[in-house]
Length: 165
Image (cartoon, rainbow, N blue to C red; front, side, top):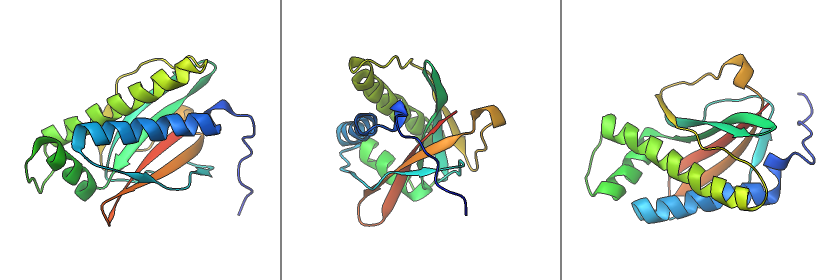
């Protein structure tokens, strides 16, 4: 096993940056879906591995940084969040559920971006792309990945993954 990547001083992995993304997630899901979430211990992985079944990917540009912001859910997790949002009881994925993943990503990234830019960063807005199934970033988009796990209800998890190159 190789040594963990060294990222001391990397602005994307500072405590205030992680807190901005955690706050963005908690505020968005609390407001949109009446869903309270808790976050786990962030970790750094040397290579990107998709954590969920459905994800929204947002190109992350904050010169000189480039990478991806990814929020990924299990199918059961996003169905529970979607049902909380709209008051339905869906049991299968459909286009509206997929669209909600993109909207959640857009709102989380937007809220986080606002906090970070107030602190001197220059994050730019970008549109999310939703993928169902496995996602493999292009070689140019791969890099070290910050993983922030979240939990809601007794058995549901989802993840924020931020890759930088």
